[in-house]
Image (cartoon, rainbow, N blue to C red; front, side, top):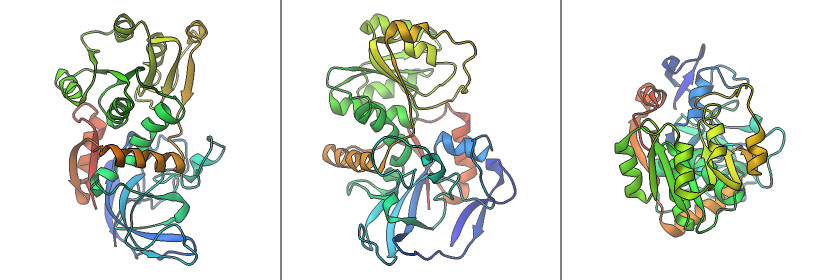
Length: 336
């Protein structure tokens, strides 16, 4: 089979197409013919060698993918040959709250990922995908969609009439927009691109803020609402203070990314106290959340927003686009 690997070191320019033996499923495992995979910022950090995990070379990247089961191992009870599925990022995170060790069970680092024609996964780490989605669309669900769903719906308790502030127009934020609208919430979305903000409005955003033109976007959100109920913070260090400031008293910030870094020097925590704010970190979500999300996606016939699809042998171009950061809207996908 064909697979993409890092063989000698880090860097997306080091990715090479290789020929490997097709794997065979063992007990309780399924063999998946991968059809598509999507890129996440997490993948870029792993390939850059900056993720605090141990990666063993040769290494197959990418956390998120979808395909069909073509063989099953002894004792498999959850699936049959022919079912269309995706893998959960954290393979043994089945239910409940995050626990120690789930990060060590993650596809695409430290475990090998899904940038290969065939992948073997334990049946417990696999979920069926909605029938109405293409493989390309379904490949966007495991991290971006599940992060937005878990933080807004499962942990955030988002309700109709709430207001959500979203940063940028990447995968998590666009899924956050779609899920918020699904529940009857209002959405404010920020971007440095007026064109992208117009696209967000077309998808249903209530208000938009160009943070290049309005650097104090947190104050603008306060003026619009008196304080938002929930913020999905993808920026990290540079945006967390403003995210908290944009909240209503008792609101929630979910930290789901760290595009601007992880370290906030000498941060004044008084704003958290004054707002009685909840600040929650994300570990994406468990399998039960994934299954519940997929039922909602199927019921509402929701379609993920895909910016561009690359063939697998152009994965380097796909990562270059992801690294540039401002030239896409929604998700970047590779076909396998």
